[in-house]
Image 1 (spheres, rainbow, N blue to C red):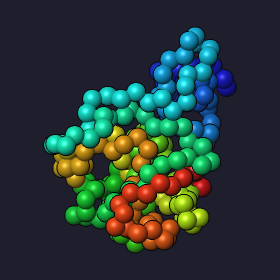
Image 2: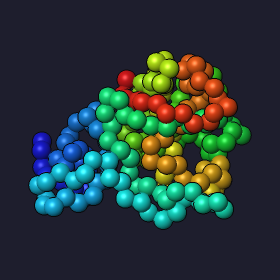
Image 3: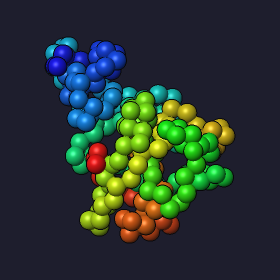
Image 4: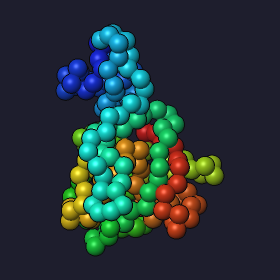
Length: 191
């Protein structure tokens, strides 16, 4: 199906907006926001995610909040961050997908709000590839919230950026990455 669209609201709840067209294939992309084009039929600029408010709990302030994420491709660029999904870990509440905590030995991730896509990727496997050439598959168990934060549910952390794959210790170890770095560039795709 291919209807012209500029935003999620242009597509009904069963479709997603990809490259200016509504699509019913969830493996092709994700719910993404884009700026308006010059006409309803012209595709908007790729990856243009409007900002909303600020991302800060205290000074110094963080970048603004995002309501969307860049499009998902076979090599989606992202930032891998380190998260402790266990009870008492920095993630705060149990994982959103299954209302459970996860051990550091489990290969699990949280995706930025747009990529999390309202939970449509819960329980699905993604493939993450580091710049050293190593890859790993991990299960999506949570959302890295780009709109809300600074409360107990979010471990008193500010909202995430819109391009985050928040991985467990096991993900970092499988990729052979130094966890002390805390954030590294990666690519990811649906496995």
